[in-house]
Every structure is written in structure tokens, then in C-alpha cells.
Amino acid sequence: MKKISVLSILIALIILIGTSCKKYESAYTAIDPNAPRLVQFLLFTRSELSNDNTMVTFTISIKKPTGEVLWDSVLAPMKIKEIPTLDHPVFVEKQVPGNDPSLLKVGFFYTIENVGNSSFTVPFERGEILKKVGFNFPR
Image (cartoon, rainbow, N blue to C red):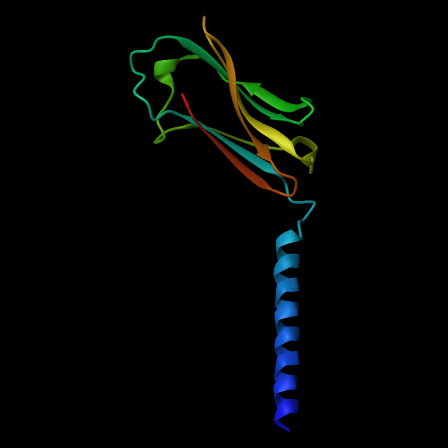
């Protein structure tokens, strides 16, 4: 009788553990293909740049890994000293055009006058529906 009770409890535990793992997995991997994919761009600085009058131009961008541009926007050129602090960042929110579900590259491309070009990008993984890209200039 004891063997049957122990065996019954063991089987019940295995079933409970198995079903709870499947529930967690399906809840995590179930992605609504109709949910809009959003990118939030934040540009700010934590550095003391108040004496730097050099001009900088930022472009925010959503691209495919191949380099195909899905969307980009050029921000108004500004002096480096005008880049806001984290208390009042430049904030732009954009839906991914066509709600493209694939792996994307999102971020900032910038040109510093008489210096050159650089970028700060991060992956927007397949299945993610919100990506926050905070760029602390200079890195």
C-alpha cells in the first residue's frame, strides 16, 4: 500500500512539474504577431561638455542586418555642449515600419564636424516588441 502511495505521489509530482514548465515556456515564447514593435531612442550625456562648441549631427535608424534601412531620421545639428543631460534627454519613439518581425539593428549614427563619423547600435532581437536604446554621448 505504501509503495502505491509513494508511486502515486511521484507520478503526480512529475505531471505537475511537466505541465508547469510547459505553461511557462508557452507564455514566454507566445508572441502576438500583431503587436506593434516599438523602438524608443534616448540621447543624453553624463559628461561635462559645456565648453565644446563643435557641431554634431545625429541620425537615428532602424536597419536590417544587411544594411537595408527601414527607417531613419536626422536630428537637427547641435553643438556638443547642447546635448541634454539624462534629466531631459532627446526622446523619439518609432514603430518598426511594416512591423518587421526579423532581427534588426537600431541606434545612433553621428558625425562630428571636422572629426568624423561613428555609431552606437544594438540588436532588436526577433520576437522583442519593445527596444529602448539609450545613448550616453560620448560613450
